[in-house]
Length: 248
Length: 78
Image (cartoon, rainbow over the protein chains, first blue to last red):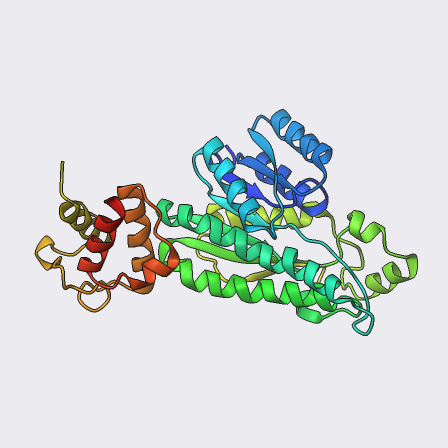
């Protein structure tokens, strides 16, 4: 018996990295998964295959979370396929790093659109269904840098800090309908995104981590499973840091 | 076939847990029937389902009383 048997989860940006790990971990606990992806169809199909091997159902659905019509279609497809949406994990995110002085307006806009507006659109799109169900879990993937700031990521940190504010407000608005909204704030997690960083940046990251090692996508995924499960039924509006102790 | 009034009344009674006798045309959802803002959003959602229609956010904001809802739905049905 899994902790999430019979539940349906939509995970945005689930073809790679942390999103992929979240999709797999939720499936291991019994959930059926809607694997949303933006561009990497092959990668998304691989995640679906892996979930089918676990013995759970999964479909891959293309959608740009920054586009409302695309998001509506994603949620409709999920509902048509599985009949409910019990868990939404807003994970999709991009980076366009640059120093503030050099950051182009487009770099700012793209990151805000996907990482912040995307969370708003997806949340709004599932709320109707979750209100009807009188239950639901929304888990937003924020970031430690949304709390601490990070040179070179004005757009990303602003979006992630915005996600934390959105998490708290959504939590307050929907608590009376038994919809619980929380955020998970990963620290430095080994993914393609962090692999691409230069060695000296990685070393300086390590020096900031009390536990002195990078995190794994599974560490984040397990926190998401917890917040999605009955074990977290009295927790809402919180930010759970999974960062080796960077932010305290 | 129930009338629009009967169907709207049933949705309101089910959602807000008020007595049928309180559901009068002039009754305001928020002032008289004890609905909070989220209740009103939910009511509109349920009316959309009941009458198989879409009510835009702009139109929904204008629905203040039971009579507003009935008039709106009747105008859309005709």
